[in-house]
Amino acid sequence: MVQAARHRSLGVNLNLWWGLLLVVFALAMLALAIGARGKGRGDVGSD
Image (cartoon, rainbow, N blue to C red; front, side):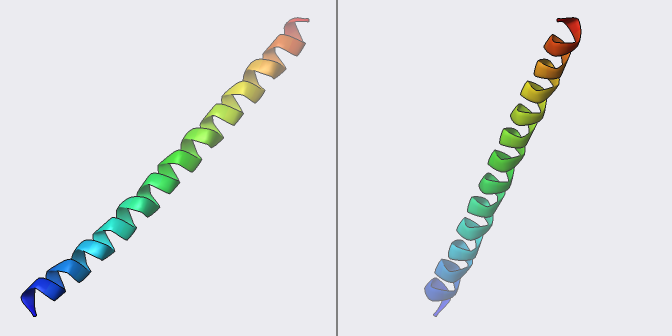
């Protein structure tokens, strides 16, 4: 019983970690997109 409960909690932790990784990845992509857009806008302004 104890092992089953521990395994279940581990599964929940894994789901949380995957969710956290997805959020971090999405934020990184968003930051890159905003940074690229900002750079592009700057180039257009200087041009």
